[in-house]
Image (tube, rainbow, N blue to C red; front, side, top):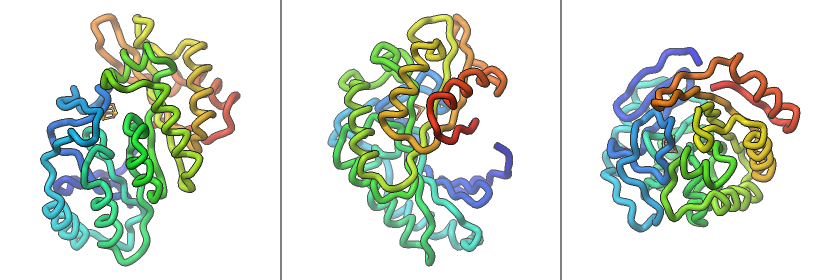
Length: 252
Ligand code: SF4
């Protein structure tokens, strides 16, 4: 991706997209993915009632209004709710969505990064239904890799999450995008680029009914150090996915 990024307080402006970071610094997620760009998860949660986030909705609303007064709203094409963690864990998600839309005088589509673990909760699925785009994460083809790659909360089961995503997808009328992180590591359960894993992942993507897929990848060595895969490293996998799914695929 190229383009100028403007950092605006807890918001980022990238071309014609405004990104709202709704996760506070204390990274809260249901996962602790080995490749997470935000470092280790500090609070790994399962039960929505136990989530404690240092997030002030009134401050958020006034800072957002202030930012909007400084940019050209006419150029705005998308609002993305994301953050350094899982934005769907923010207890104010519904209010954030309402504020994001109501502050503007025209309808701007809303996209939400919703990695996946919270799709087991019907209340989260219901909240997400009104967003125009949902971006989910898929990189574990089986439970063992789910433990080693996503290092999910011990109460979470991959099968239940996939089921939750399928339930959501059946009702959802917006665009469902997926991010697939490819991992090539010397350790079996932190690698997902072998034929069997890819075959399973393609099956999961099909079952859920993803509309568009983004791929990125890392090569890990024995020490756990990661280097980004180049597009040519991913070409074979991309071709395999394209041969088995008729959806749009892009590199991140
Ligand atoms: S789901 Fe996203 S934010 Fe959470 S640990 Fe994984 S990569 Fe990081």
